[in-house]
Amino acid sequence: MAADLVQFLKQEIDLGSFPGASYAIGSLDGIETEGALGNAVAVPLRIAATTDTIFDIASMTKVAVTTILVLQAVAEKRIALDDAFEGFTYHQLLTHTSGLKAWLPLYAFEESYLETIREHGGAAAASAAVYSDLNFVLLYYALQRIFDDDYVTLARNRIFEPLGLRDTMFNPPPALRPRIAATEWGQRFETGMAATRSIAFAGFRQGLMWGEVNDGNAFHAGGTCGNAGLFATARDVFRIVRAFARGELVPRALVEESTRAHAGDRGLGWQIGELGFGHNGFTGTSVWVKDDRISVLLTNRVHPCAAPIGMSRIRAAFHRHPHSRA
Image (tube, rainbow, N blue to C red; front, side, top):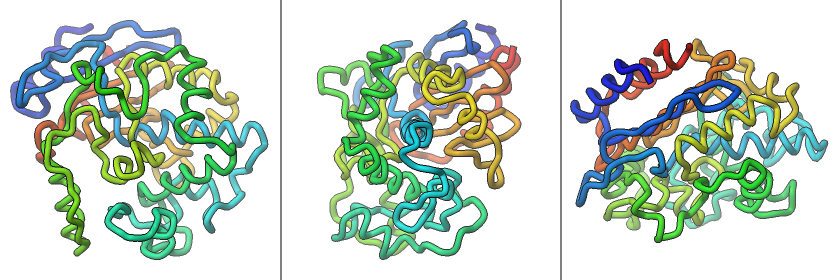
């Protein structure tokens, strides 16, 4: 890997942008270079990051699992993109044009997640794209109805096992904790988000989130609700995205349809831009594909606290780097 890109990541670690990072870069033919630096856990002890470190990839779950499963349902003619679930078409949910609120702490309400979205989701007429976790929570429930199976089982049987992935999972077992990157110490970020919306909740987590999903909605749903919850190595994220881009998980025609702009910078699940197509995760994760190049960057930027940093700048520099685009 280009020494200056490694130096760039080391510099960001030294600046305190994140304790550690793992990366995988290559082409549709496979990984060409991978590595890790810094610490997967910085407090209360130090554990070095390695290429085997498993990260909470947060919202990248939306494309690594949920989008792929929806497109598989389309390919198998179980649904059409214009079919509706809970009053929204699959196209609206995938492109974030449903008009639903960007975020709600669904766990803070007495009703079920579906009932809370119906009552408090703030749905309006179809609009310009507004990125919303609630879209993918609805897709989580829709998928289980479409396939008549559990979401986690669907992910394992239709994505992880066919690709031979051993380090990709929901709800990692406690024995794997030494290999997992820690996230926040206390659920402070979501506490603040709820407070700005005048939503009270007495059960915010207080300890170190280490081996459990950072996202509150996913955590209180049992580990995932389609919007977050996936744990994986950079190597396995690369393999999922490579298989998707090669048309191995869904037909090529659907890959192309999914990775073009439908509304603003939104494709079907994917974000579209000058970097190609990709997706980011709140915990400091990202993957982008341009032409036949794939670059994955996983960091634990919310550990031990989700302080504001220039993550957009960092991602852009990493994914635009000539080595990522070579």
